[in-house]
Image 1: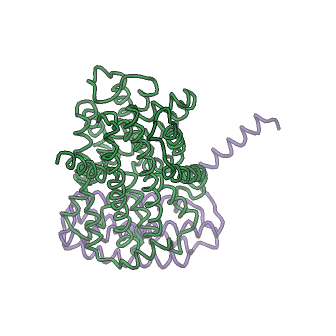
Image 2: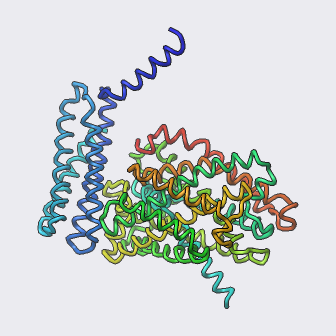
Image 3: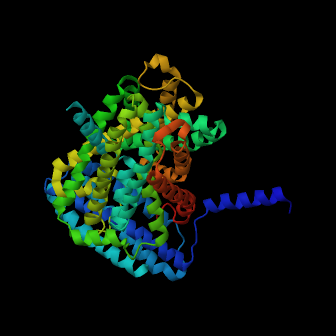
Length: 146
Length: 410
């Protein structure tokens, strides 16, 4: 094969590779799961603190709304990057548990956003407690996966 | 009394103007991931910027000309052009990050999407650069930037275990879970944030704007030797507040609102409002400085009339560059690129471009033809040479580490 054809083939492979979901090996998949769970823990704990401080009257509402928006975006991005991976068969259980926890985190962040939007102050502590428990579960799974 | 006031004002504006979006984000990120284990980098960065800003200020005070005007004359147009390209690209990137930082601060204050604020922010900065007097820009935003002292108050109020913080800082003991490549990547980012090239561009050209002479050297030195280290303490406070509140919770800083979270936790609404004011002032002030730095460098290289000490119509090309760079920065941000990501790139590429800025200063500051009796002494040369080695090492390692660690995420 001459050089231009080789270069074209390599470029094609790279471009095509970018359009196909990745199928990582088990170790890489574990790393990705741990990284995604770490990001989710970060967002859950951030929103938990935002709700706590908002409940205590120590947080400005615009700042809380802004943080909620960013946390939801960050979680969506992390979740999307993880769920588009093809898990190795040996990691089906990890895949199920991680995606369930990420889904729960997404639901709670959405609940937090709605509660703040509607100024349902009574819900803040409940959602914050739920987020704290969820963050703990995600942290445990992250620890086991690393 | 008037001189004392000038010294005090200079020191205060140096403190308030020391922190910009790069310092805010990088220090908080490092504090939330590595605790105080990278505090030594802030100290090293502050000493480095003090060494080179003093040299640069002395060159201006003695020669009455900005440093890079002399660089082109002393080292020739080719070296000058390489310097211009490298430093300009980084300064424009930093300008973009600062404008994004102002928009993020306004978003925090209003909850209105940051991209909405970008055109207004860019227009406001351009109007200030066009119309406002140099002293007014420097002093107003420098003094308002002192609002960031709220991070030191917050850290104090949080009542941390000072012994533990000191132990982590003095032993550089990183958290076990963090890999060494990421540790060194953030060390370079922190170094780049403390020693951004635009600071020297602005400092030296600002000296010409303010008409420095040999008599100004003591005042310039007091600003540098007192103001910059106090500014460094602000940086350490931001990292410390994040280390105390965010690190134990597993929160990694990715947004400006997470940077401010420790202040809200410690001081509530009032503290948070002061922090947001500080964000706004620090980023707006730095945006003006970086914007001017872009104009200064290009106009000085091509020998155009420049500066705010002449009317805009007398420095039309200089003001055209300011307008063009402001529009470019705004357009880049309006592609909806994350301003925090731009900030991360700007601090890393600052580290890459550092030798282009600092080697010429060292050469000019040693040239008796320009400096006469004020050329570098042994102390300035010792520190200058040590830092040149450090700056070269950081420059060479920055991009490989950025790729290896995927921007510090692994």
